[in-house]
Image (cartoon, rainbow over all chains, first blue to last red; front, side, top):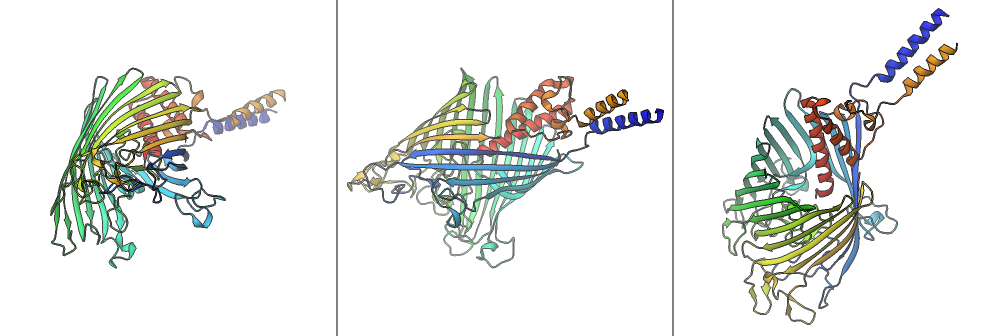
Length: 490
Length: 91
């Protein structure tokens, strides 16, 4: 019996130690994601993406729309994002992100591709891979590395590049200094068979150096450098290659309750062979951008204000370009007005500029779609965008944001609308005023019902620039949008 | 025999007791799951719950955590905030 008792105690001790032993480092599987559904009522938004109301004769959103006033579009758009992170430990993880977008009733089954699959019987092959990257700390160093297809947003608030890209980024913290250095490969044109040359010779590459120094708890200053090196045999307006250097100074500070932030940036570079004659037929770029923003808690919320400036090109630029250049490029090397790879979310606008935070996702449309406010480096008009907003927390479950914004082009060129009465370009640079409101109610911790509504009063820039249903010159109809939505986040 | 049965029962109940979840942490205990991915068992948190837990742990301050550990928790909170921003605002 004595022996048995000992055995029991030993067994109990063994079981206890097994119960309390914690694995040295458990492998962690993290799942997160979101679902966003929006119902749209709008005269210009059609479930597509890209700029609206641009060019000498701003086009109508629907081709067969010949009425005096535009017809109203109504559609549902949904977007789901699923993220899985395989975390070996705090210093090593694989991050993956997937996306499924659809507009209800669009296409289904074999006729559907990405961003579709909302029609009868669904069953579309429409799962997009958004991110796949390894995130690890280099042992014995203060450097973290992310390698793979990953999100990248520049420290100029996204006005140069804000997109998912393949590359290598390193982040190093040295005391009060944070340093990011990276290489991103945006395109390799040898995959298109256009060049017939070896892999890696005809690329669009971006190099990144970002430094931030914390002067004090309330003041950060920084410097950025982005290299945009396009070695592809591109078409309009670049015939052979482009090299753009973007340098900027950034700062953010807290003065009591007031939060300030801003940047000033310069772009300098060369576009070779602009007229397709030969590589020596080059145009040179000198462009500027700056931003100042302030935010302060007042009453039950915060008051925000911001100004963004990007420089523009004149009518006949010759070989001296002065328009701010984002990174809106298609895979064929053509500068694309519909490829959105730069953003400015601070504005709080719904229609005036591309604000990815308030937008619906794939189908976002706006008047100033890329931050240079043009369709290619030769016709960037530049922008002055002043915005004022108030974010109110009405109850812990209910919020409301009110925004107003004013946009002007910085320069006149061929994109400016013509008055169909005088047949001359309008004198005014004023594009319009947007007023919008967003309210949300938290149905659960993870689910918010949202209402957004925005209206743009177009400025003199658009005067008499379209022909109405009766065949006479008219102002384009003022854009409006109303959206009812559900946001689930987990 | 009764004694043996009680001891076995006690040992068994301890063996199957699941690791303490973050919500059950006392004010003076460290949350090893949040801090070092230890003892997370089958815990699955939404991003909002994870942030709330991190905020609660950060509030415990230097009484419970070292300066390095607090920095780690703050970094994780920033990482979660960035994740939300990227989920909603990434184009």
